[in-house]
Length: 92
Image 1 (cartoon, one colour):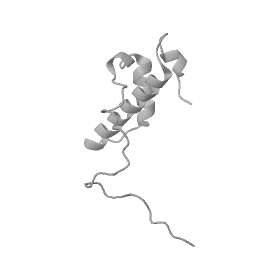
Image 2 (cartoon, helix red, strand yellow; image 1 turned 90 degrees about the vertical axis):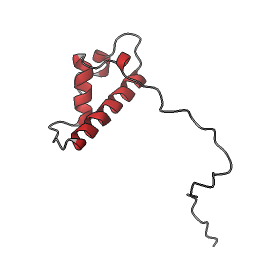
Image 3 (tube, helix red, strand yellow; image 1 turned 180 degrees about the horizontal axis):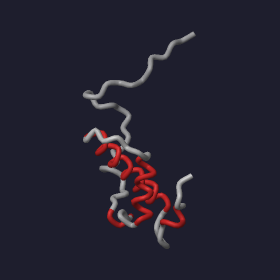
Image 4 (cartoon, helix red, strand yellow; image 1 turned 120 degrees about the vertical axis):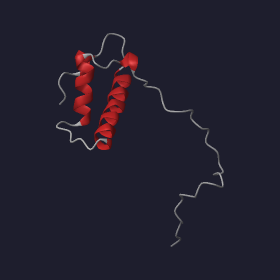
């Protein structure tokens, strides 16, 4: 269990969903930075991200919690450049 709890970190009117997305994105950044610099982490990236939000170093206001890029409409035909991911059906 993470300490402090989300309800202790969130301010009135802030969304739990946005908080979870922001923590996940910040944790990915921490993990990527550690991997790039080959720095071993003493704590898990999610724990570190939650601590940043709890201390006030990170806030939901300065994090982008929107989905990345526009959502493409689903089409029946796959573009020719994409390989088909469907598995062949075997009849018995």
